[in-house]
Image (cartoon, rainbow, N blue to C red):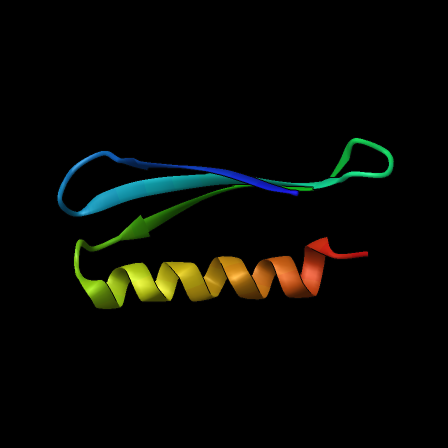
Length: 61
């Protein structure tokens, strides 16, 4: 299960926190906090790709 939160601090800076839980054990397999820069579609896409790649490569056992 993926749980996340996004906070826009200003038009140029924001952060995202996400946790991936193993629903069999109810324990996190991944718990991340990232910051991103920009308020354009490209910036949001880049942040989303980063999160997706991180989850795929580092969070799924």
